[in-house]
Length: 445
Ligand code: ATP
Ligand code: MG
Image 1 (cartoon, helix red, strand yellow):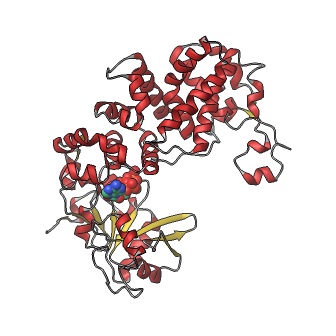
Image 2 (cartoon, rainbow, N blue to C red):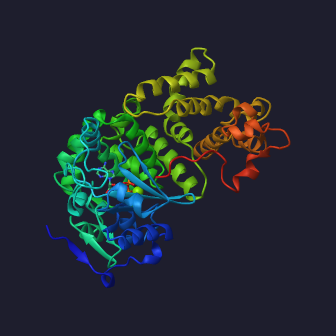
Image 3 (cartoon, rainbow, N blue to C red):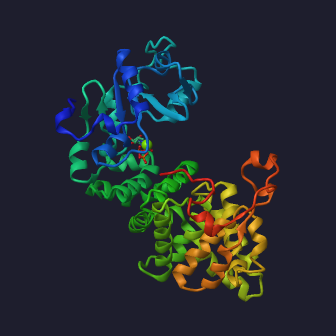
């Protein structure tokens, strides 16, 4: 198929918008005689006038050939499927054009000793590396399949992505029903791009997601966790939640919460989650880090508080009840979304700390200031104060407590070795707030 090629004069992408490192890689490949394109989200975001997170490069050079062009290059992945070119801490990913075959199939084939090409780049099996066209049509959405060609600065479009981008439409490449079934994670990606980029769904794409939502139960749980994080840290978490509910995807991801919410929209329970995610969006927009554990605490806190409240009414300790209902919920949830153990514990700790923090923010809260989760627990209380108007005074008191994590609470092993707290005065969270939280950042999405 002949692609649509838009020449430099007719599109808005300027080389100045491309990182110097990505340009070096593109020109390096070009000068060595290879095709070199920017692909995927980088082209899409530039055409939308947004700042891309990174630039992925595709080429007809094999990974081994890429390594011969760049000394600062490492091949990664099993069977060396990708090349990374390093400039200090900056890392540019270079992939060889691929055809539609699933990575798993590729790996299985490689395991059977079927190499695609010899080390010299001679094609042994040509169904893995592909042509630019094959590389475009294996991608998920038309807007994600555009190429920027460093040779003449043109944009190359095999799939109608330019037109869709102009009309702000998200459309699966190929048969949407098939694309959802063969990789259900794409349905979550669809929600992310629609929410974060303000795109509307093409009718057949929307229908396929509604029809195939149950396939999510079959998706790879670790990949779902990764995509769930990207979704809720995309800056459009609240909108993403509304879309997930709209498509019946929310209860596929979080079945127990889905049951708790019921089918009705606009209930106080629904609004509570929506407000929690609005808070996440606002904090992130203000440059504050939101950890995955804090995200889950905010999102599931309403349900856990309700369940723990019932146990407390029967005489159980509220904090312990919060901890156990949270862990119990995650126990079932990991059948869908593989939330790492450290995140599960941390979420439980954030919620279990709330009764102590919200009493008066004084004597019972103070010992928590040595714990690593303290800032997240306080952030949670901040949200509750905002949501309910209660515990204002407790929050003010808690914010004045210096956070001073004990050495064995430090996530940074170097600091633990240096002796942790000695010689360092903790700062109150109120002072720390200015420069953003010091919690380790979640994967950005
Ligand atoms: P972001 O800006 O969030 O990184 P992105 O479009 O670059 O968005 P990535 O997850 O980085 O998304 O993937 C890079 C590209 O790889 C996508 O633009 C798309 O072309 C392709 N891709 C990623 N995941 C899939 C998938 N599950 N199925 C098909 N193509 C995919
Ligand atoms: Mg990307």
